[in-house]
Length: 282
Picture 1 (cartoon, helix red, strand yellow):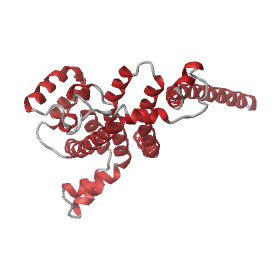
Picture 2: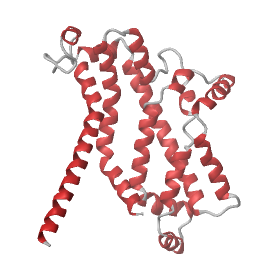
Picture 3: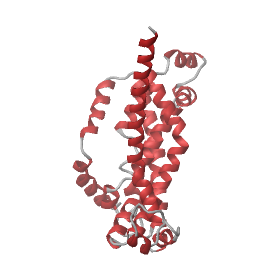
Picture 4: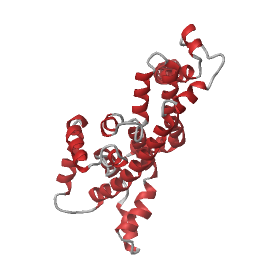
């Protein structure tokens, strides 16, 4: 019996070792491009041209960051991107919470049919709606404005509403019923019961929305021209075209665009893990 136990323990340790090796390999494949980008960004053009891309920067320089901020318009693009992302994220959270609560906890005719029809719009590729959306904003005279960047995305999204609806349905009905017995209305239940209990999933949704909008490229490229309302993704693409042989500048711009997202993930990491664990238990 003891030999079988030890054999089982060895097999379990072997399986765990293989899993950890695969996870480490996946992590290295994910992180390696980011590290390479940051290493290239702090090299001089002469060092990058003379040495292997994997060589450590020596000396470390910040001249590439100063160049892209001053000449490439990355500073203004970062401000525009941040404003756009904050506005869209706030609007999506507010409208998605309201819509998800309506679909999850209120009764009205055609509720489920309306929800699934709305969810079906996730199957429509964004390229299909790009030209009609462009023509609509052109008729309204809103192209190359801040509103052109935010209005198509600010009123919720099918994914956000679906995610919150499924989470709201896991909240015990007894808690909502007790709040109503205490005289709480729908708004009070939503603000004081549902939202506080949904902090992990709201943090996850916030992170997903920020990353999605921060990396949005196609619609800002179509809806704006010039540098006035240029976002980071478009500015980086233009920089790559302008300085296609100066990879240190391009990598500096890429690093500037990535760093805020990395910081944001580190801040929200615990909430994201809690939401995943909670969903797994359900």
